[in-house]
Image (cartoon, rainbow, N blue to C red; front, top):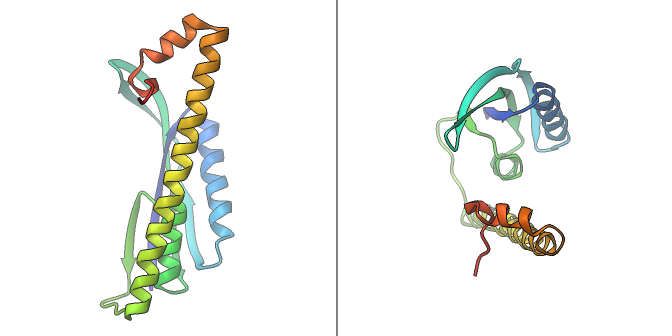
Amino acid sequence: MKARFFFEALGSPKDFITQFLNKLLEDIKQFEGLEITNYKIEEPIEREIEVNGKKIKMWSSFLELEGSPKDFQSLLDFILMFSPSHIEIEGIKKIEFTKDELNNMLNAISARILQLTTVINDLNAKNQLLLHHLEKVAPRLAQQFKSKPEFKRKQ
């Protein structure tokens, strides 16, 4: 089985995008379940995007990676670990699974979702603690954050 994976990046400054994609590529190279056959990182291009009614200049690029997963479980693990933006499977017409293989794959998906949920909940709790501390040391600044929808406290 062969596959192509695409990883998109958007941000600023330009050097950060290139460094981010190079670091991602190095991390992917450490993944033992995928034999990389080819890759390229596109030169970042400047984009203008609108955020809250304001136009902001950002940089956009992507990593395109071709490789052969060791097996279907490795493919699934890779996708869950690195979250590519787009995937193209090549050189395969049909896949069959045993009941145990299907159970293992579904449990791997469930475990990864639980792991991500834990990380999100932990970050949310830390943000709330930081906001609480900010209310004590810089009430005006805390009020500015509290007025933004993404920083509102969950009751």
